[in-house]
Amino acid sequence: MSEVRMTPHARTVLRALLGQGADGTRRSAVLAEGLYGLELSRMTDLPNGTLFPILERLRQAGWVERYWEQDELAEAEGRPRRRFYKMSSKGADLAPHALAEATATDAIRSGRAPGRPGLAGGAR
Image (tube, helix red, strand yellow):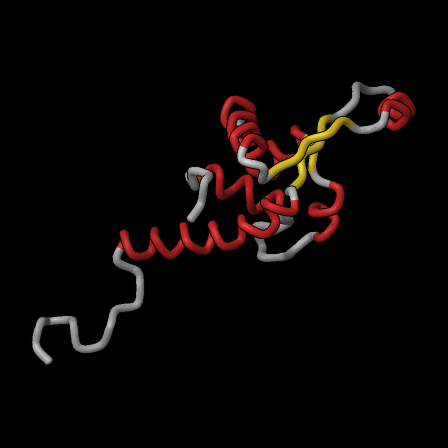
């Protein structure tokens, strides 16, 4: 289903960009405004060398958009401009399904998936 390789790190980045906190909370502002690189790095505990290649793959797949903040905001705070990343409408539609599919696949591979009755032990 997914055109994006759903590595554990990619899933972590997608969850952050979808506004899904580690505690299960959802932050709708993240979907609307996005997150800047350092903020994403802190949220995901991923180093830049891992995070930014994932963001670029997601952007190339059309799942993520990136944009620079306004010059005036950065100047008012006396710092360089930040580059923000946010889910595109395509990504917002596809990512939750891809995450669910990847989680289900992991559960099957690890043997945690619920079994079908009557198959354990071979006898019915």
